[in-house]
Image (tube, rainbow, N blue to C red; front, side, top):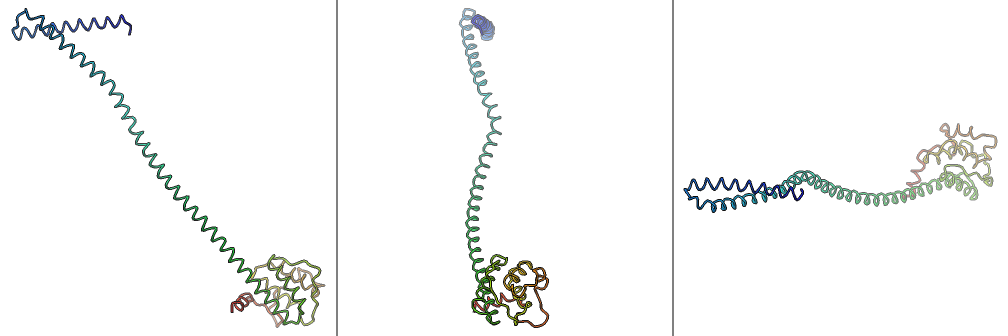
Length: 254
C-alpha cells in the first residue's frame, strides 16, 4: 500500500469514527437529558471508546489471522505425525525383528557348522571302520584259500583302492598266481561281496576282478565277467554273502 493510500484510508476511518461518535453522543445526551453544553465532552468520550473498540478489534483480528494458519497446520500435520510415529514404531519393531533374526541366523550357522564337522568326523570314522572290516574279510578269505603273504597284501591294496575310489587299481605289477582250487566264480563272488555294501557299479566291479585276478580271466572280457558277477547256485570256495560287512563290524566290536 502506498503512502497516499494509507493517509486516505486513515482519514476515512477517522471521519467514520467521528460520525459514529457524534451519533452515539447525541443519543446519549438525548437519553440522559444532558445539556448541549456537555455534548463536546460526551463526543470526545464516545470517540475514545470507539477508538479503543477499533484497536481491540484490530488486535483480535490480527491474532485470529495468526492463529488460523497454526490450527490449519496442526490439523494437516496430525495425520502425518501419526503416520510418522507409526513408521518409527514399525521401523523400531523391524529393527528388533531383524536383530532377533540375525541372532538366530548366527546361532543356526554355529550349530550347523558344528553338526557338519561332527557328521564328517563320524562319517570318516564309519568309513575307516567299514574299510577295516572289509580288509579283515579279504585277509581271512585269501589266507584260508592258501595265498601267501605277498599276494594277500597285493589283494588288500587292490581292495583298499577299489573301495576308496570306487574304481579298480590299474597296476600291471600285480602278480597273483592262479590256483586251480580257486575258481572264477569264487573270485567274482568275492568281488560282489565287497562291492555290494558300497553300492559300486557292476562295470567297476567286473573291472576290479579282471585287473586283480587277471591270470584267471586272460581269455575273458570285462563285459562277460559283469554278466555273471553273482552266483548262488552250487557250492563254492567263496559264497555270496550280503551281510559280510555287518558280520565283520560285529566281530570288530567284540
